[in-house]
Length: 141
Image (cartoon, rainbow, N blue to C red; front, side, top):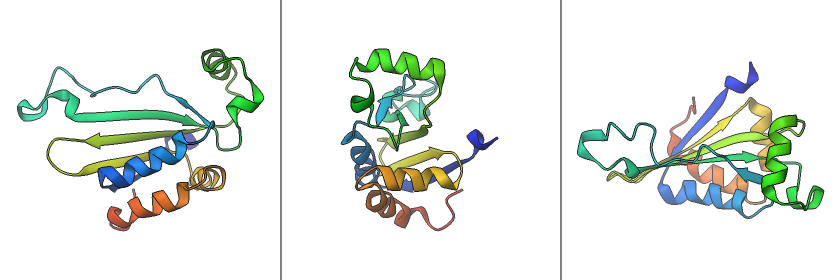
């Protein structure tokens, strides 16, 4: 289905961080429970500490200011949202690789419409993502 479609953009750590910051500047996200230091902590890459790769996971609600609609606290709202799934959201993941290169990645799940929704709903997102895209070398598959 649509949920399995995703766009990946590679860029510098600074450029990708700017995309993350644009989301963090709003009240339109919940921080996913899947933020974690590394996928397979038991298998460090070539002796590197697994914490060299940082994954940040966001659920972004481009059309919804969460603080406005429900001032009951994020934990309550997240529980409600996960149970209901009624409000459309976009899954966005940020990967930062600190193993020597200046490498980072933005992964956005969903079809073409989701990027548009993020660009419309998150101030500064368009410019920040454009700066990352420059480094992605064309096709972002």
